[in-house]
Length: 534
Image (cartoon, rainbow, N blue to C red):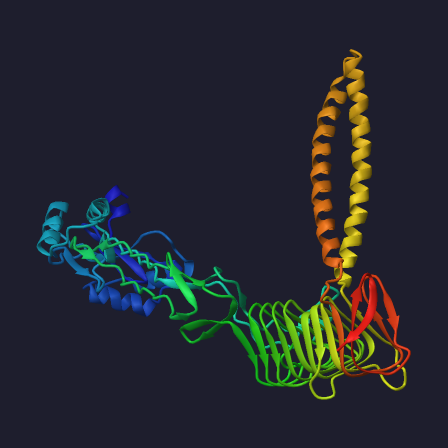
């Protein structure tokens, strides 16, 4: 069989291929498609091959014959021209060709086909080599891509990056040991002034493509975004920054930094602990075991049970503080509360309306209990400058300690600083002795080995460090000693009555009240506590 017979195909469908030779009609089965005999018969008749050997075709089907075989004599059929159609896909990115080779008729060549393409204005991405092979082999093809454009590259829409996580409701947080802390829910988005809140990423335009007509294919239009409207923020370089400390609140597209965190009801298992960088307002109570921390003011409309309250400013409790010997308040500013019972308070000024009972209260400046009953009984109260109450102690001689003119924390820090100074001085003495020894060796002409030279340099550096620390500690201790010295104005003031059993203390003296006294005051004079006219 010659090369032409091997390569040329005149007719084709899903079941078989047909070749027309000078005196024979050859057929090749498409075994991979599981050809159907009836469909092959119909295909042969459609192509005017009426006298085919169907028994032979049936036998070849059964034998699964893969080679060409003769199925009929080639009677003198009329000549047929090549059939060729070119279409362009809807997106104009491909030109496809249908080609049916003729017989003994007009045959298309590459030049003619290129002319047809030009008439259809198809000029870009033409696959000349592919077209050439199709026309040379003269095998029928259907929807064969003969020209292909370039798709447009889509861009990227602009978008916003939120630098905070919106907290979902939770039952609590998981501790390191695997247990659940039901008090801590971490529901507040705290931000500090200058912290980045939102960043806008600009849209990126896509790259244009080209269709088979050589025309530009525009990429999809990208969408840009705007930075959200934001209260208490500043915008710089496509980012939103917090202008104040507070809580990030997002309402749809709007964002605000709220300097006050508000709780309508109680601080309980539903709300969880509060840790906020601004101020906190609580409409109800703070239940036992919970924590409220704020860098700003804390205002509580109800009672505080055995809870922990910590403020970088002031604390206002409109009702009472029932500490049950566990509750505590720490405030950098002042504490105002209706009454205090079995609790601990540390603040700058403490103002209590009704009573401080069996509690430990420390104030850098003053403690006043003058509204209502105005009672201090049991426990210990300490203030640097003034403690004032209507009543101190009780008729039952309840032990009550009242101290002025000293700051326990300051005294503790002073002692720690003195201990550190002694340690520094001891180490400095050892360093100086080592330096003196090495200097003596050098003065006697002893050549120091490399390790001793290195040690000498290190000792000198260490000496400078110790001397600097010593100087700093001495200054701090002197300042603390000055602060620990009672002010001439430090006073304990009783507006109505002080009972036996109350112990008054100052930085240098102690006085135990033996008899009930009315409307009196006490101060330290010449290192002694003395009563003065109120």
